[in-house]
Image (tube, rainbow, N blue to C red; front, side, top):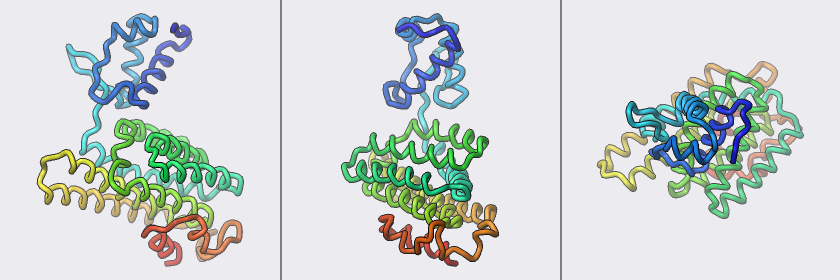
Length: 287
């Protein structure tokens, strides 16, 4: 397969990035430059330019005199990224809620139906793909290019460990409930709830990740429990800071019991939010 010469290194970077994301190039794998050049029918120059791009994105790491390897996400990386994502995605949903319309909500509802079907069938790869589409849709609705760029950069790193947290027992169901809660909050225009959900989601990711790690780690149980608690506490503080930084707009203040389209608060039940997230979110909306 020969690539077009126009923006050749960008095309090479796109192909390698996709192979990393779909798992063909696994974390820790060495990238054989000679083999890649032969496969793509290109010279070393555009390949090395592409490798520089992916290294700058954090997807590859370069080791002197050894070459490039697919990056491996560490526990510390995830512990630091999840609370930050909670802040950024909370802000993203907040901005999206201010301008979402009924057509947007209908499109999101279709995606959430697909997500629910994947969860029920325990299809982790397909679940992640639909989950990614939902996040991208909300980012587009927020219409903030700087926010989109920052979240996009961090999510590239998280995609290296994309299925890790979903493998924890019960996590896929919890993730689905969190997504349904976001959809319900968008439906009723509850800005504060969206910030709360972002923090709760980060807590779920952190605890689930440590749960997965505990099954393959020799660390003492007390140490693992402490790390999970610390991750949850960080995420909670992140959500609290977000609520104080981005209060509900004056136009929405005092109207949390009403909805954008006139639906009552029972929209939570109609949206299928059944776990502990929903009551806490409703408390946030009405407090």
